[in-house]
Length: 278
Image (cartoon, rainbow, N blue to C red):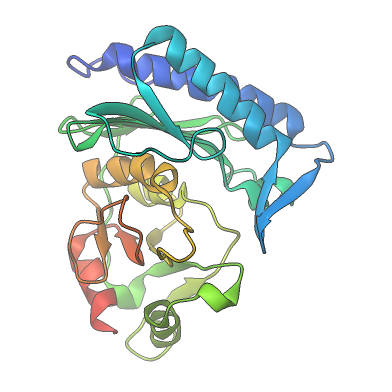
């Protein structure tokens, strides 16, 4: 099993707990990859399976065993809080459910766990169980794949690959998202624009730089939540600790508890080039 670095001051124990919880959920995902799953729709194109719920349950059990006083915000079992406590865990037990259920690619489904404390993400883990890749970060102490330090590779828009993470139901698509999708494919836009099955782990892959993916534009909105905190917080910390950014379309740091379209990019300059297309 891949493990995070041991040099995170004061956070190594909590990061290890999160890593082991993610790996326990990953075992369930690996067992279910080649099996036919019962698919349910939370909304048109918004899919969930029994695997999601089983992973959520085992993660919560593991976190509560280590930190019984901590609250947990998770996508499937406990997706809401009346108010945000000082410290709590944020869990996406199976990010990229559609990619998992349709077996789109093994490097899309992931498990995401983050610790939120005093109004910010303190640490996070993103684990891709089908490829065995483990990403982790601690605020102010860097981002890692396994025990290798990550630093974003910056690029200019005209030489970049940009991924568009759209709503499955087009009625919720925002005008800003539609405008960017069109303008990115015109002269002055990106070199490559794609729309794959939705998965938030793409931000960790931007941080790694292996795929040459430079930015992901996420459509989102309060009328129909597409990217909840469980989708955003863990990969955003990894990306920003590697030198990238997660910003709204005004260029400000994205607030995961205030849903709106946003950009995850390898650099602030690249994000600004994309925003200028509006």
